[in-house]
View 1 (cartoon, rainbow, N blue to C red):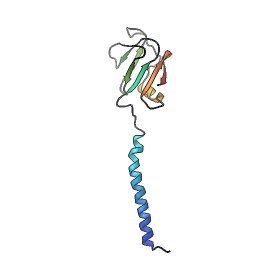
View 2 (cartoon, rainbow, N blue to C red; view 1 turned 60 degrees about the horizontal axis):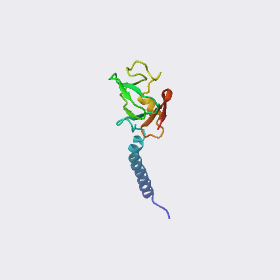
View 3 (spheres, helix red, strand yellow; view 1 turned 30 degrees about the horizontal axis):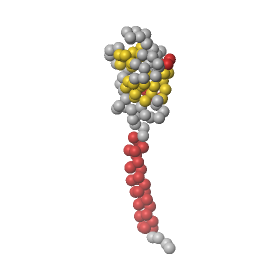
View 4 (cartoon, rainbow, N blue to C red; view 1 turned 90 degrees about the horizontal axis):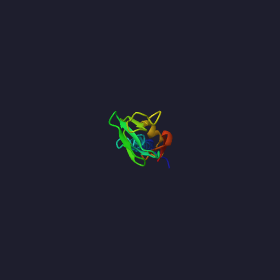
Length: 123
């Protein structure tokens, strides 16, 4: 059976149109995969050091951080950890940042833990 050229053109045009609709539908879905799921609620950091630590957030007050407790870090936060209650002796030589914590969050659940010697780990 031989098809007229206009019918072949219609079939190809329909296929191309359908593929374009599929591509435009998938674009937002694929783009959302690159978004940071932790950005709005922050990353939960658990104190798993077996120590009571103190911290300051964005040059705020010196706050106790008990072992087993969690604090939340947002992208705009600057967090400094201390080993003394006067917030004079820094616990970490390089304090955790949001980007560092996010890079260690392998399972994308927005949770990391700080272990002894200021080692960060996925939770």
